[in-house]
Image (tube, rainbow, N blue to C red; front, side, top):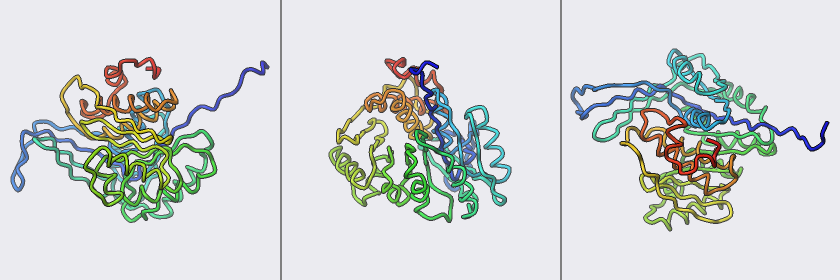
Length: 318
């Protein structure tokens, strides 16, 4: 065998969604609180931050395994809807309850009513740990969204503690104590929005300088890279080398339809950009293109939607 040929480990990306959903999206001219409102049209999509990240990563050319929990006929419906969008789906079935239904009302303003979801027992949680035990060096793990009702706020920290010596690249997209307690294990990336970053430290952030200051405080707690989404203003990235990049949002080519999943699309884009290019500027550029493409769609962006917002899609093998 030619000794210049090496076997290169294929990147395996795993996402975890503790509390997935069916998202029932209703479009109506106005919402009458306390009265009867009628939708002009409606759609149903699978929901959950980890699911969203996996779907967009697949559009960007990566192979993903989506892990999580599902229950009842709503859980089965959710699973049937993501088949074909994600290469591998390995959800743990819960014997009681129903996966939640979230109602998203698109009117003059966006309103959300999110269900609670089924209970995950410690025995069910151990089944997830057993699946994650197979991860090895070079694999990628994305922990995204809230955990199921009744689970402790150190759930992500406990997952990361079991993987700490394996060389797994970890991303945490969560809020509050769930995020804060995970930082001790130095996740590669966290992605709060400005309000979530403020809430993490119990402060009010008035300027971009404030955002940089507290993103660096998150780094002091352990985060390697902090990507702060700023909505229509774009995003800010504070890299592990201490550099802060402020990037404006991409120019949209159509109207804003739905903001659900835009942050998850950014996580997918950043991760894909980093894995392909090993360059933070290109990673945040792809993140913003994915987020911008998402808001123009009823569900999540496809590869062509993302390419249309990039000046050099060939940089990302798109």
